[in-house]
Amino acid sequence: MTTLSGKTLFITGASRGIGRAIALRAARDGANVVIAAKSAVPNPKLPGTIHSVAAEVEAAGGKALALQCDIREEDEVRAAVAATVDAFGGLDILVNNASAIWLRGALDTPMKRFDLMQQVNARGSFLCAQACLPHLLQAPNPHILTLAPPPNLDPKWWGPHTGYTLAKMGMSFVTLGLAAEFGPQGVAVNALWPRTVIATDAINMIPGVQPSMCRTPQIVADAAHAVLVRPAQGFHGQFLIDDEVLAAQGVTDFSPYAVDPASRHLLPDLFLSDAQMAALR
Image (tube, rainbow, N blue to C red):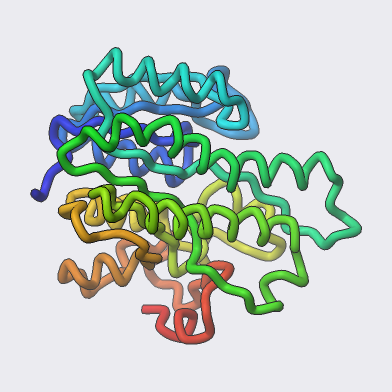
């Protein structure tokens, strides 16, 4: 299978950034795309809503369902999944993209912010999977793909921002556990992480990062597509890096994915090992 035509994807946090890019890539195949996010009203500081992305999905050739959904709220998630199945007759793919970020030390992390990250990142990914799995288990080629890094216990990633690292690694460990439980049942449960920082609104949270140091969300979208068209059986528990996925597809030139193709100073993303950072293409 090389296409997502006719597949139904439930994508969290799809109103902008990487989630939007994954949605539009699937739409070009003729997929059914559920844009599940909180942003239903335009915000001058954060462009993009579920409705604007739904219109883009339709224009790109897909079918869209815009659902306002806070993945911290169990009732909202279960209602959104039920609406998805009602609209499209089933569910093939869950993309856990929604994430909250706060890159501060312990004394500069309000507990409200700490709780938000744990609720959105780890708990939200678990909740969305729990709600989707009864339907995924009935799908012919089911996937759960979570935007989470390879598990990493190196203190250098924990000391500067324990709260965020805990929340993000929570997504990784949820992936690990669900892969072990549901992989043998035929569900491809895997994680995908970018080699470089990606130019989204989240870079505003990282001091000193300029867009010219980043790649565009399209590289993650293309890598996600390559993962999601793969046969699910026997494919689980993998912590994939975006450009490695594409290199395996024969891509050798990654410069088109750079915000500034002339830049020679791409910034490695958080949580990578020394070897993974050294392998920046």
